[in-house]
Image 1 (cartoon, helix red, strand yellow):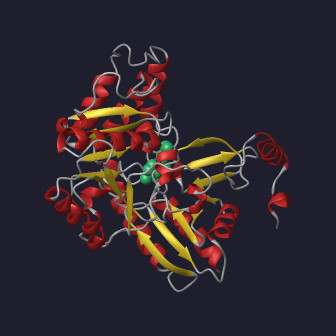
Image 2: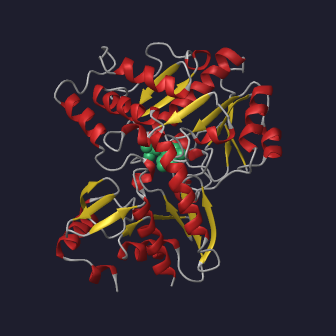
Length: 406
Ligand SMILES: Cc1ncc(COP(=O)(O)O)c(C=O)c1O
């Protein structure tokens, strides 16, 4: 059945409005969502779907988590924006709690993930010049092949994905690309002018790519030895998704800089942050960096409530326990239409046998079976359900997979 035939009138109307009025920078699946709760979403025709993407991990706590909605509601009635020209009674408590959760001393609040990555890059460069003593304008940052850190001009300058990178030059210099998980290449790329190694502990957009065991620990050792900052972009991997608060925790690694976003805003408002110790984040001076909305009271109230949920450890535990079931269930499909499964916590990349269908086709078929996921890179389907998902819902997800591969 074609997409168009499957759509009812309301869906059709919204899709055609979108096609008429929205720039063509995405190709959403033909489903128009109107409401949601927990792990479930409902479309304009009243059909319910299990959300197994969770806003690319921005909805780790599910849709409309009551604690987060209550925090947002009560803040909406009090104070929503101050700019950083003044203090608010929300920002200090949020940053204290977030720094404590991360075991760090300072927080620099921003809004989107890309802004936080930009902030981390500026932090590392400035640290390089003012603390490490790299000659001005010469700082270099080592980044990983297959990376995804956002869409700004500087960030896409070091993307090796032609779709993200091409036709946006001239590009920002100062980045050296090495293969993800390759310690030797990393060692060779680090010079006296290197100020940071920027990595995703698990590459999300890349297809949930796990580095070889021990690699994060090796990167930590190498960056310490060479006086280089280890910057972990945990925007997608962090905040409970992998069964630990941060994906780096799996190897007991503490980077110099955490870059956080997505779930930090509880799926309600964009909240991102750079979290590090004073000897690193202390490089900023008034006026040298900022954002009108960064650290706004509404975002801070929600962010603090998010940190409160994470501090209980409940979500990390759910991701561990249910993640083991997800891993087992997906592994049973190996050789039955699935070529590879990479799972960490409630996060999985599933490579569909390309002779059967593309990842995109698999996503369409799963949609027809009431499950929303997103393809990435040809034949891979990414699964990242909200961490509030239950065992029964996980079974619905696995059943849908079994059905489309039959
Ligand atoms: C690892 C990582 N870093 C950065 C970003 C960019 O975040 P945003 O889309 O909020 O700018 C993303 C988004 O997918 C991401 O996965």
